[in-house]
Each structure stands twice: as structure tokens, then as C-alpha cells.
Image 1: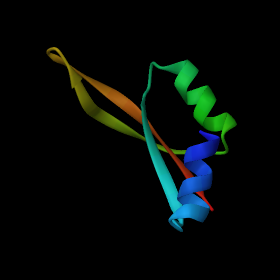
Image 2: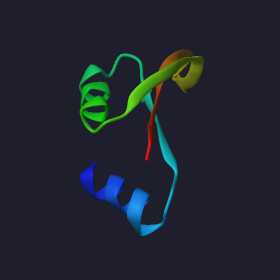
Image 3: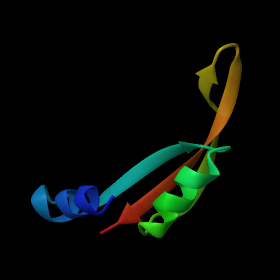
Length: 63
């Protein structure tokens, strides 16, 4: 995450990044939050696995 953050902010000059993480993936959500991202919403029924749809957490980091 540190390399991606540095490249996004300094290497290519992005203003912000978004990350979509399945709502039930607590480890990934924790890692992304630790990298400085903030939760900005939940997308309902956003991804499909098999026959079921699942929510994702939308996290954002503004540089």
C-alpha cells in the first residue's frame, strides 16, 4: 500500500484513490484503513459471487 500511495500521489499526481472491498473482508478493510483510507459508503449488491450479490465498502484517500 505504501508504494501504491506514493506512486499515486507523487509519481502520477492523482488527487485521490478509491478502494472497493467486500463488506465481509474485515482484514482487507483494516489494512486499507491503516493506510489512511476512510470509509465513505457501502455499495449494495455490488459484486456477484455465484448466484448471490454482495455489498462492498467504498474507501477513499484524498492526497
